[in-house]
Amino acid sequence: MTLILRQACVTDIPSIYRGEQDYIRCWESDHEDAWRRQLERHLTRWVENFDRLTVAIHEDQFAGYSLWMPEQEYAQLCTINVSPVCRRNGIGRALLNAYATTARHSGFTHLCLSVRPDNPARLMYEQAGFVRVGTDSHGYLRFERRADS
Image (cartoon, rainbow, N blue to C red; front, side, top):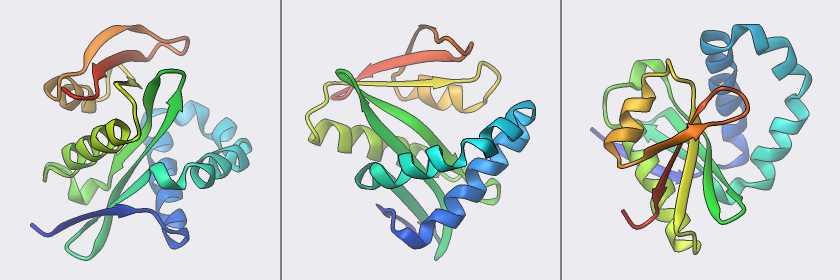
């Protein structure tokens, strides 16, 4: 498997947009209209955090991405997505590891993320040492981990 992780560039935005849109349609279809109305906010978040937006290229194809942002003393994973045809190849884990490493090198000692209770990615987070600490205001499970774990 040839996997390259790199910082996103402007030409990746359409693929990231499609990934986010596919996620919304699959997992939160009842929120699709609201998500579209807030598209400018999403684009702004991606661009303002470009240095924290990682892209995965598998066999010369766009395969996924992750984005994290500072949240008080935490490095919060905002999104991680692997294209359906590329899943089950370790790409999600590679993106998760890259997030943890980059956050640690940026001075963060704690990582956090939130995930829907029915999202199978939850198992990947648990296997990577994330521990459930509660539920956020949207009903998502909140997980935390030390960055150096």
